[in-house]
Image 1 (cartoon, rainbow, N blue to C red):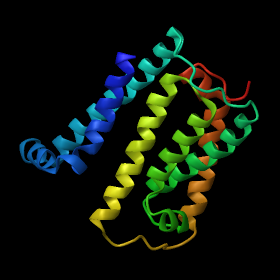
Image 2: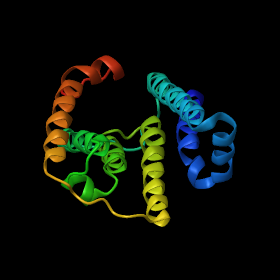
Image 3: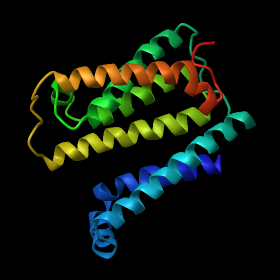
Image 4: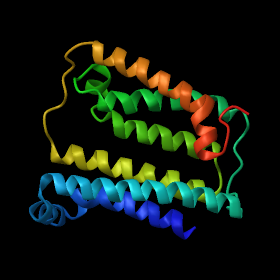
Length: 191
């Protein structure tokens, strides 16, 4: 469990620096430069993801205690929610603004929330609650923080970014659902 918690702390910690310790972020940028800070931020993020993944798998293999047992039919809902999550992830990274990005404002974080909720609906063990619950809370805090900072809401420029997000998001979702999830996580999506 320690590796999982360390991964969560590293990933969420580096992502919350701008929110809870902006002076630390500014000092890091001043010392390392903009690109140096981005590299540092990325290394800590990737290390956190790696430790979360390894720690999650290890804790589940050790026998992470079950808190609740979701019904089997929930798996079908999760597949749909994950398709939406992948579309939202891609929409958040398409360089131009489509209707999805304009409507959701923060599609990447909405994708994280959708992904986390989907996994909490189907996984009732402590490891899952720690991992997905923590990332859900982080995404909620991040959206609240972004809203407080204000800024101009995005305006849709065309439907092309939406088509790109839907096509690429669904393609990644299919590949992830059929092959990558089993290979990477060790658990088939469709059993």
